[in-house]
Length: 93
Ligand SMILES: [Zn+2]
Image 1 (tube, rainbow, N blue to C red):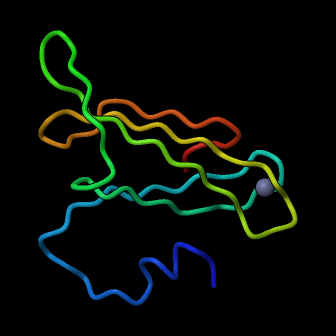
Image 2 (cartoon, rainbow, N blue to C red; image 1 turned 180 degrees about the vertical axis):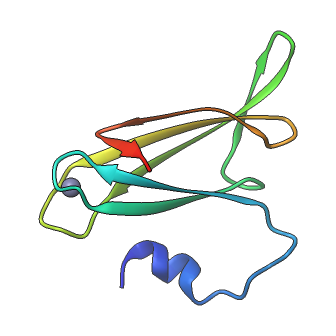
């Protein structure tokens, strides 16, 4: 069982929680890894002209014998709509 399953696998679905889920493919071993951002707790706000912007950064690593880390950066509006996303070491599916 991996860390994400430990953290999220057995918890009951909470209709109040807002999360953004995504899948990235490791560029080295092609493993597809799912990630999830809690839009209530994982975002850090930055003040930009025209409004606040919310950032989340995640580091994902697969379970294969591949130690490629994928650095995911997500950017949301104050309404939690996705503005931009980037990943280093992988690609979004
Ligand atoms: Zn890999």
